[in-house]
Amino acid sequence: MNIKSYFTEIWQEKGWWKSILLTGLITLIPILGQIYLLGWLFEIYSLNHTPKRAMLPFTPTAKILLNGLKLAIGVLVYFIPFLILSGAIGLLANFFYWTKIGWFATLIFNLLAFIRNISFAVGILAVLLILPILIITYDQRKTIADFFRVNHILKSIAQNLQTLATFFVLSVLAIFIASLGGSFLMIGFIFTVPFAAAFYGNALGDLSLITVSEP
Image 1 (cartoon, rainbow, N blue to C red):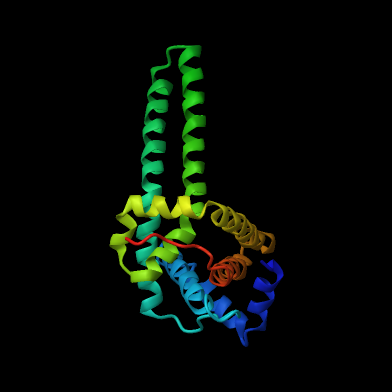
Image 2 (cartoon, rainbow, N blue to C red):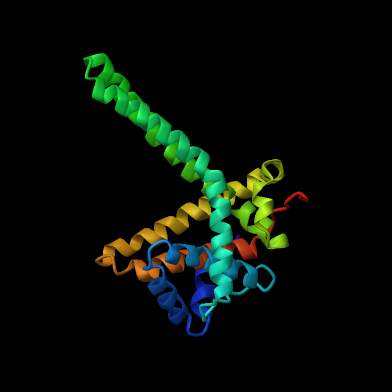
């Protein structure tokens, strides 16, 4: 694994900044932009998992958006349980808050609020961990139905724990890269967010060491 190459291969692509800028502008569109970004990441993975060089999509297409929508559904399938748990704990915490029955209720409220935040954070970390599995599973047959084969997904996770740990570190690095945009009056996000997605997609395409079980 050569992390430096995942950066330099992007820079070596002719006109790379145009693709990054255009994608960054699209991501400014609420919800739709984030779905497109996910599809854009998948497109980079698809273009890169055989040739070992960065190949950035330069033209927005309905295909990219559709792939992003399908992958977003897959992400939600595994994030919604954590979201429901977090919401239920939040409602219970609010119940104790509004009862105002003394220090015990305050203690329970604070404890539940902490657990709610932890459950939400765990959900995000879980999605980051299994995202490579979701992407590669979708790449096999391009069907949403495979996301609902929970046993198939869990089996694939168990088979690839060490590799997934590597990609988890890369995803954290990608998030750090994306966050750097905040240092440039927020406008920097237009460049850093899609660049981070390109970095991650390039790495995933180059390190296609994950094997997924047959649905």
